[in-house]
Structure formats: structure tokens, C-alpha cells
Image 1 (cartoon, one colour):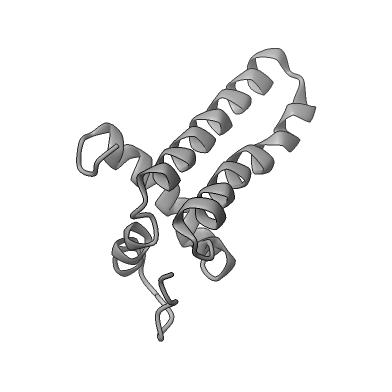
Image 2 (image 1 turned 90 degrees about the vertical axis):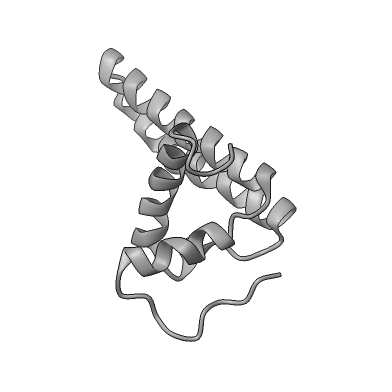
Length: 105
């Protein structure tokens, strides 16, 4: 289990390497990707159908998959508890990095 850093991050550029370290397990990363893509799918569906109640499922889809990845596979505490905004940004940057080949899918 990885420990939390001693000092607080003040820039996303400093946080992102830590974020990637906390997502070293491939299954955890893939669950994050699945949750993020599901979030996009739910958002698109809600916008196209104007069934706005679907928007309530976004946090469940996004965090649900990610937290299973952390607690079951990565065996660490999600960074979102300490760094909610940076963690959310990290999810999308990590997905982009996977699609562009910068990190292993």
C-alpha cells in the first residue's frame, strides 16, 4: 500500500506523477477508464434524450468503478479523498494519456 505524500500538492503538474503512482495496477486503471467512458455515455444520453435524472448516475458510475479499482485491486485509498479536483483532472488526463499511448492501457 502506498502512503500519502507528506506535503500538500499545489500544482497539478506536481500531483500527476503521484496520481499515476497510485494507479500502477492495470486493472485499477482500466476500471477508471470504464467509469470515465460510462460517465461520458451517461452525459451524452441525458443531453440527447433530455432525461436529466440520468445525470444523478454520473458520480456513481465514475467513482464506483474507480473506488472498486482502488480498494480491491490497488489496495490504496483513492486520491480523491484528499485532492478531489486534482484527482478528477487526473482521471481525464490519464484516459487521454492511455488513448494517445503515453501510458499503458
